[in-house]
Length: 289
Image 1: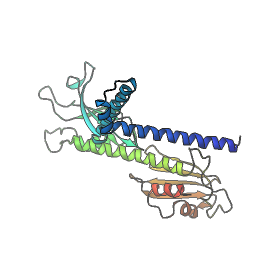
Image 2: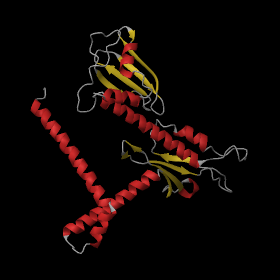
Image 3: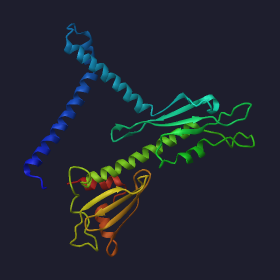
Image 4: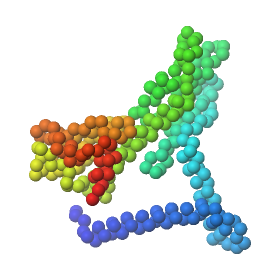
């Protein structure tokens, strides 16, 4: 059912109201977090319910700011835990690594890697760590990072060969997680710029029109990640053409190809990507009026 002008106007007003509500929340939080505001509420002699409610909100905002600052600055933290299994190795002692990731201006649910020390004989137990449990996505090369930075102790009793570096392991793991979510964000930005998955039903009709599609429908109808690592992006046009983009770890364009009824469509690639070096540049080009 086609939308009427009244429906479009209601949708625009609703979007404007949501934006104003969000702005009001931001401004309120900013005012409550200001030191002069807190000093005024603390030293005020009028013990009214409204004053007490504002002071409670100011305390809550201060706690939220401190937590956000901690999570932003201390993106890698460790903690001790204990495995409840009575047969766990090393008396159930666990070292946990908590990884914080911020994506699209929001804190994501933290990732956890639990480590234990299963090596060593009946005498002295080795201090070498091993990954015991984790909540890392399968597409992250956790096993490879562990093999590189948390190598098991050598069987011949040497020291250098089995040296571990937990700090480098944690930093490399966080870098892989940040890159992964950055690529997901780039795909989302590309979809939004093309008018997919948002309030627009279709993308701009100016894109496309390759060598084999003159006069055809060059609208973008789908842009999505084609693999678990979000390093490949699948692109589909309304006239049946398809494309595949290979993205690097940091969002750079490695390779892109479009295929139509008569083979490769280089003109479609030129019109969609131009001389862009990163997928983010392509999203900005599509978002331009």
